[in-house]
Amino acid sequence: MTSNQVEQIKKMKNEFTRFMLMYKFALNELETKIEILKEEFHFLHDYNPIEHTKSRLKSPESIINKLYRKGGDITFHSIKSNIKDIAGLRITCSFISDIYRINDMLKNQRDLKVLEVKDYIKNPKPNGYRSLHLLVEVPVFMSDREEHVCVEIQIRTIAMDFWASLEHKIYYKYNQSVPTNLLRELKEAADSATALDQKMESLHREIAVVKEEQVDNIEESLAQLIINNQKFSIPESLLSLMGNDQNDSKNIK
Image (tube, rainbow, N blue to C red; front, side, top):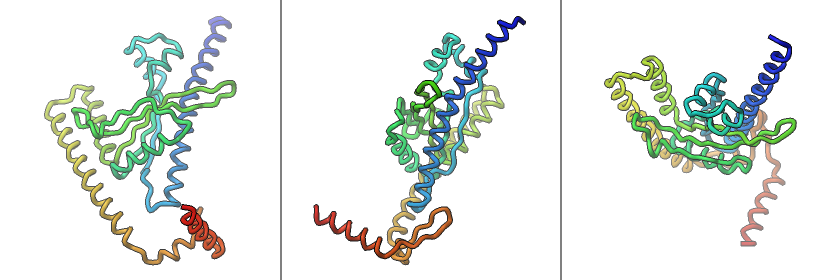
């Protein structure tokens, strides 16, 4: 191998590394946004709708194989144009309503551009797959330019995620040729997961009603802040100031 060939390979490797880093940085941006939302809910609300998140980058081999299937050219521009799921983020929730709540919060992020929404919850796939898919464009600021990078976000409940994981393992084991009886049982399992999600959603609403009716120790809880496991008492002067501000706003109305 000549020195010129070595230099060419090094250059291509650096360019591909930089290309993949763009998607890594886009995922980092999204994960930071999710962490901020999780902390906000932890401090200001009764529960956190985000159970956990998982991110992944497609391997170079998977990217090239998918590009071949799509008939695209082997260029960075072609990869970026034809393959929109190089970077993926999965958000798992407890309840169906949380999925749409998180969806709305992400759409309200001014620096995120939602390119596409596929609602497989309201319109499940024939095999029973259910999830909400968003394709978003994330701004990434590199050392010499700004890039707009696509990331696929999947939002689903724990039950949906468990079913999808099982389905993936079965398809992998049978190399896509799954016996008919297993496909039927998978669909039945998907229906059972849907019934469980609906029951849990109903219980969630009932618990919310009970919480609204409980007012014990409300004054004590309102006068305290807990941040990073530190408890702070809100001074009475500040409480009275906030009360006056509310009265002033009512008078203005």
